[in-house]
Image (cartoon, rainbow, N blue to C red; front, side, top):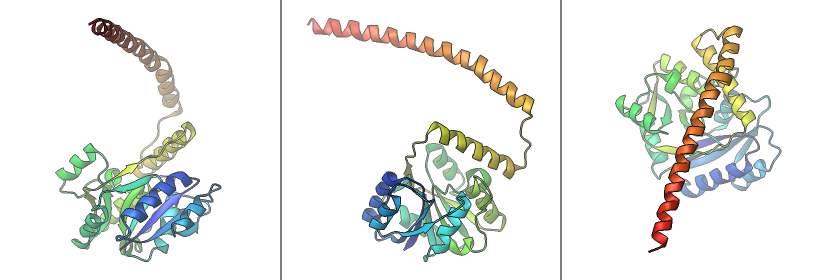
Length: 263
């Protein structure tokens, strides 16, 4: 049996989908579900209560803090970390993950395959993550060994990439991050504002973790001007060209349908 920790803020509809599937398909694998709620103003808490979740409210949210709070409340050794937009797929999802932990006591965390490129990388590396700062856990859907977490908590100060930093930390201390050939659906629909904030936070975290120097103000402005003029102009003419090709195809469709209708 495992614990499930779900981070959430105002995602009642998505949360209902996730909890419905977790409780109906994986009841034999899951011992408890913990919702770490970031002061939702919709009915997320009511949805969670309907499905028997334990609810933990977080103030001053960071991804690392929310993850730590959830794992701290977990009573089982293995903890699945989810966002409210991620759903495990397949009857062997939990069984394969638990087997990976049980077969090697040095496994600290599990990343699930979520793309063709990710699968090829995992297969090539015998399902062991070689570059944890780049290919480490994705806590939108990942599993951790709580006993390792008790030694190495997630960094609560990072604005993003706390999962990759944790992966590197545990690997540096002799543990393993393993890929498992099970997958999940991630169905978040972000607004333009949330996408911009995501870009900002992930970029800040990336430069902090790699110790690299960000571009000068001159390079930032020059890059933006280049994109606003040369790149956008090129894209504009490419779109016109593509539309003309579609127009030609539509004429061909029309001619073909006219001929066949006369038979």
